[in-house]
Amino acid sequence: MPRLAAASLAGTAIEFYDFFVYGTAAALVLGPLFFPAFSPFAGTLAAFGTFGAGFVARPLGSVLFGHLGDRRGRRPVLVASLLLTGASTVAVGCLPTYGTIGVAAPLLLLVLRFLQGLGLGGEWGGAVLLTAEHAPAARRALWSSFPQVGPAFGFLLANGMMLALSAALSDAEFARWGWRVPFWAAGALALAGLWLRSSLAESPRFLEIDDHARVPFVEVVRHHGRLVLLTAGALAIGYAVFYTVTTWSLAYATERLGVSRTVMLTCVMAAVVVKGALTPLVAVLGDRYGRRPLCLTGCAACVLWMLPMVSLLATGRPLLMFVGILGALLAFVAMFAVVAAYLPELYEPRVRCTGAAVGYNLGGVLGGALTPIVATALAEQGGRVPWAVGAYLTGIALVSLVCFALLPETRPAPVASVEPAVG
Image (cartoon, rainbow, N blue to C red):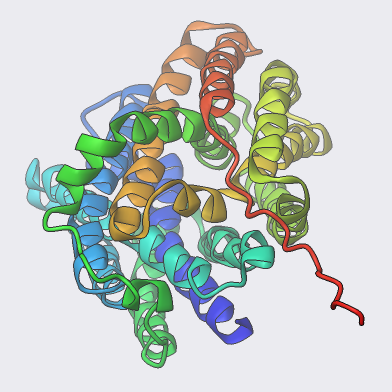
């Protein structure tokens, strides 16, 4: 299990690195380079629009790779999704800007972002299922949490590179070529991920399935449609919170408050370090007390924290901004530390790769695709404190709270010890 968990963590870290490096670039530099005819505000909105295209593609990737995972095994999904995401990310780094090829530049950017999302939509289901289906039932949430730590590593790696380049280069150098370096690095990371995954064994639970679903997505829609919608609605707030603090806040702080890129990236990265470190610890609580209670607690915390968070962000003071971001990510951890065990347990094994991944990634569309766009527009219309952004996030949290309340608990019942008969 440690070797399998480490390989899953590394793989999700690499794939989410690819996804996050785009989000950071969209907040900092892609607007002027690919949408120069727009105003700074409209350019940021357009860059976040291409960012959202990756989320729209993720459920489609779940259907495509979920079919592969339910029909051919979880392991092939890991290889195919990693190749697609890595190649698309490297291509973004090689893409000419609007000043070189005109309107073709933003169109190609949109296509490559879509392909990134398609690959990531398959990654989560394969990595999580391979870990969850190998894990002992009593520690399933713990072992399944390691792929969930991967996004934190990916975010830190992506933003660490952006931070180093931003600090080392002038604004002109960063805009001319510096932003491309993290995208190029994705190629080397993808090769490393393929090497790590080459020796992984197929899921034993998949090998036990005798009757594979002919078209898994059709079966999921027919028999588990309500469950998919509930899980998507439940997870929407997690995505909304994460991409508010890791993507929108960068653009808001640098453009509206005049906070330097270096300071803002440092605040966000410090909070993500805490989030990553706490994920396995919170998952242990999920094994002990159940998945649903933790999800409800985290969702309720989001309802209470969103308005204080935006007020702390609006101060422009690094320590207070860090507190606001950290509080939001702690609420996020309470939910997402256990969903890698929770979602697979909700679906029968023959359609598990499709069902769990579609629900997870559809939540990304609802909570992650539109949030940076909506938050940017709402903040532009308000005063210094973007209360409308906080109210918007609170509304999503309330919807997610209702969805979690309607989902069942899935934690396996503890196995009672049996005293041997005497006499």
